[in-house]
Length: 174
Image 1 (tube, rainbow, N blue to C red):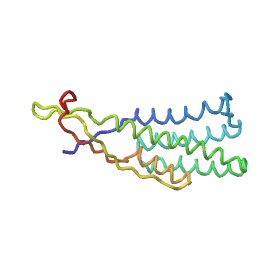
Image 2 (cartoon, rainbow, N blue to C red):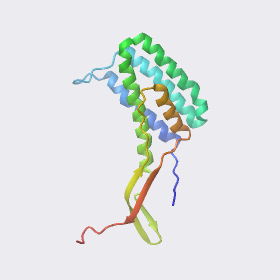
Image 3 (tube, rainbow, N blue to C red):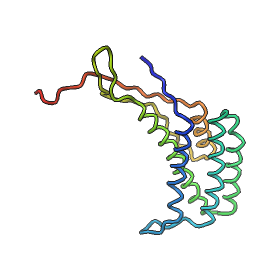
Image 4 (tube, helix red, strand yellow):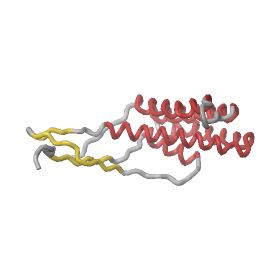
């Protein structure tokens, strides 16, 4: 049997907020070895991430094509940041990569939370025995490629999660 679940706009928006909030505290924290990123890197991150969020929102509400303008602008802004920041652009790229990874991980975690722990077939309760998920990992450092994956996931992206169910084992019997 195949079951289809949908992620809501709110699920995607929570994932975006989680991605932003994982980066922003690092900007202002100076506890221990966590040095704050410099103000100019922080400002570039915010400007670029605002465009990323706009693109994801456009993808959710309309389509991947509607998001292309915002993502193209984000990539152009990153090129501008590269010229201004020089070698420090690596710090910016790392923060953007971390935020993108956080967004994608949050969306996947939300999808996995939708897998039912127990199903009832007839009068028998079956519990989940295993879950498998198909996932693609990109080795590209390209912001454009990463943004395209985010937009694809937000607009009509699918990934496969399979659950195998069986009768619950009685842990008292040996």
